[in-house]
Each structure stands twice: as C-alpha cells, then as structure tokens.
Image (tube, rainbow, N blue to C red; front, top):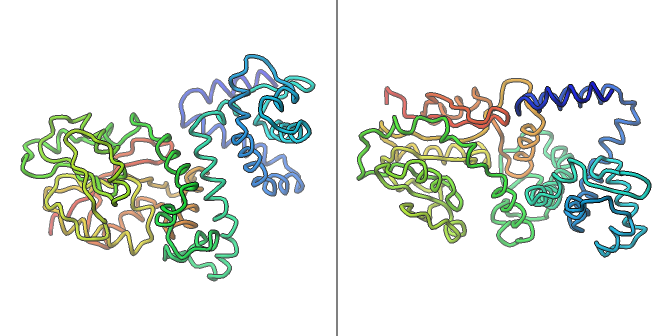
Length: 383
C-alpha cells in the first residue's frame, strides 16, 4: 500500500493540474467505498469540522504544533494554550480524526501537512471569513430557495445573505458597519493574491500600446480596490504612455496604495464612466459580484466611454462546459448566496456581452487550474 501511495504522490507532483486531478480521483474512490452511514456522517459533520478548525485557529493550536520540533502531549498543549485539559483532549481528538493533526503516539501530537497549511495566515483569514460570513449564508440557503420557489436569484437585496444576517443591506455596505466580518475578508483577498499569476503574463500589452498617445489614459482599473492591479501594471510597463487610473468607492480610495504615476480617483461604476477613450478598461473579479442587470449597467457605462481603439479587459473565471472543479463550483454558489450573481462559461460571457453590443474578441487563460482568464472585449467592427 505504501508503495502505491508513493507512486500516486509522484504522479501528483508533476504539476498543479495533475495534483488536483489526482485529488479528485482519490476522493471519488473514497466516496465509492462509503456506506450510507458514512455518507451521512461525511456531509452531516462538515459544519462541525469547520467549527472545530476555527477553534484550533482561535487558540493558536496549529501554529503551536507547526512550530514545535517534537511531539506535544495534551497536558503540554493545554498549558501553552490556556485551555481546560479535558476540553483540549476532546478538541484535539476530533481534529486528529479528520486529519488536521497527527497523533504520533499515545497522548503525543504533531503537525502534519494539513496542520502546517492551517497554521498559515492565509488559512486563518480564509477560514475565519468562510466560517463567520459565508457559513451563515449557506445555512439559510435551503429555506431561502424554498421561499422563492427555487428561482435563480436576480436581486442583490433579496438573497440568503439578508436572511442570514437579518439586514436589508447588500454585502459590501453591510461590511462597512461590521469590521469583525470585513477584516478577515480583506485579509483573505489580500493574502491569496499571487502577482506572478496574472493576466499580465499572457496578454500582449506591449503590442497593443504601440504608438499610444500620452495624452490619453492607457489603463483604467474599474472597481480596483486599493490599486494592486495598477501597481502591477506600472511595475511591468513603467514607460507606458498615458495615465494609469484607479477607480473605486471612497472607502477603498482612502486606503489606496500610493503608487507613483497612478491617479487614485473616486468613482461609482454604476454611474457614467468619466474617462473617455482610454486604451484599457480593466475589471478584475468585479462582474461576478453583481446580478445580471447590474452587470449590464456597468458594461453599458463602460461601453459609452470607449472608442474604436479601446479594450475592456474582463478578468474573471471562465467555466468549462462540463467537469467544473469543486473549488470553482463552490465560488459560483457562494456568489448566488451573497450577490444573486454567478460565474459564467465562455458561451454565457459571449451572450452577456452581445446583449449590450460588445464583442468578445479573444480569451487569454493565465491560470487554467482555477479557470482564471482575461477577455479582450471591444466594440464590434461594424459599430
């Protein structure tokens, strides 16, 4: 058995795509061996797993084990963490049973691969966000869909988010008055960014900006948060002619990066686009946060500012027509619960764009494992 496991690990180590395919195959194999009772416990206790992992994060358990050079007993862990020994034993026993901690011997516990993953700041932020904000939405989703007679949500003011948190506000305005939920979300979004995994690695920017006039804006990052995309564009193309402009709401602009050569400006993208005739209008992960009618409005506002030389760069996931990975499918349903929005296939993107008189010219995929791509969108030539 060990030899077979070693061979599987060698295969999975080839590349990220193979690794994920291997995980899926092993998961399917494990699921095929389940009894009905196994399946009940696997799904029924998923929320308990997340809750107990959150307890481990709050206690600093995973960091403690990851930093220890030798196994620790329950008594040692309890003393270092300041917990009741009986409770500590029960929590650690459960975490061991789900593979989050390794039991090295009787009353001896060490970090395994998952423990080390859970000790990272990225995991702490992500799981705190999912447990605190996403999980309550998931919990109310069945009742919400039953109440709405199983219609696909179309209004961001009527989702399971409002039911979960008893609010009339959409997500982001609600975040503003709930910093305990906003902080882990922002940390997760920040920490999961990988500058080397970017549309800039695949899109032919240099070819597109040849002979571009310095009198016109070259890069407008719409809804760009604090300006990471603008900073990366300036870093990669420091001599690109024309203005680089970050646009977002006041709260984001107040915290914008002070990148030299970037104009940080307040703009609501549901209002007319003030920058006319720019080369690139860039939207990363913006459209999937909004229901279809809001997507249409945003695209129409951008289209009205374009000239025949302009390009909208839509940086989103593009789902395959079949075989969508669990991680991506989970994000799609999360968008449904929070924003009445969705992820799309290329065919769905083409239709969405055609409905507002825009054309998807070409798609550049820069992270095939997670379907991340940038779409080159322009005015139709006949316009």
